[in-house]
Length: 305
Ligand code: SF4
Image (cartoon, rainbow, N blue to C red; front, top):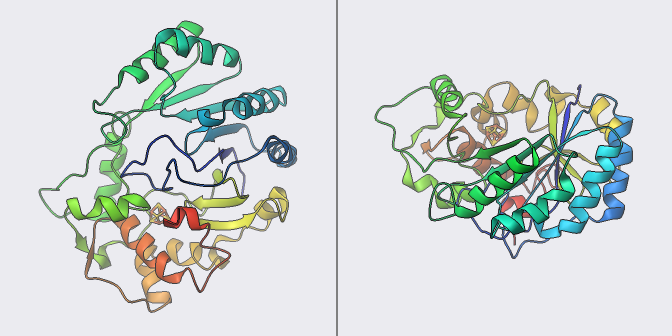
């Protein structure tokens, strides 16, 4: 594995509890990284020489502003390119947004604002506008992440066509992926297709991972809820060097036939139809959690608050 990006979930806590959130972010969630843990992560990220990008996300990373700012300073000083993903709840006015973003001047290579009808009453909230205007004034590279509402397809289509369609809308609005809270809250609103259609993972490059998510408990996740190790128990570099995707009990089947293969490999009970590949994948992983308690973690990502 030649890792280019480490996406650090600073916390599972969030100001919102959005229906589409696949990490079950919530004000009631637990799990936040400390300064000491972030220093340990920095040390380990440096040891994996291929990592260029560090993203801070969540949950909502600005909830722990002093910890976030300190981490951005330290990772930036170590030569990493830094991105932050935030819902912009803090940009209550342009002046406040300027004040909060100014300390990041010269440190960020990307600031992504999540804004859509899950977060706010309007697709681009006034807080998002404040944050974007402040970032632009400071010369910070800024962008927007928006997730579309569930849609009812007019006709049945293959997973490959679904994948292409996903790419086609990715620059403006991305489609919902029906995993995490979205599987529970939103899947019912769209049309479902036969489970046998989901014979590949449409979103993650599981074979050649170039980015990985690190959660506040130390779990390295190739997709939310699928761990390949815990950085607080074993060095990141060792985990990366020993990643053999085909040998992984969940990644292996996913690579060799998608969520359908998970069903077949473990003879899992299933429904006739699902909203998308992630919906089937997530539903099967819920069933498999007892069997793979160290792999299908943490509880937070499976809805325990
Ligand atoms: S199919 Fe599974 S592994 Fe692939 S993106 Fe969806 S939830 Fe993640």
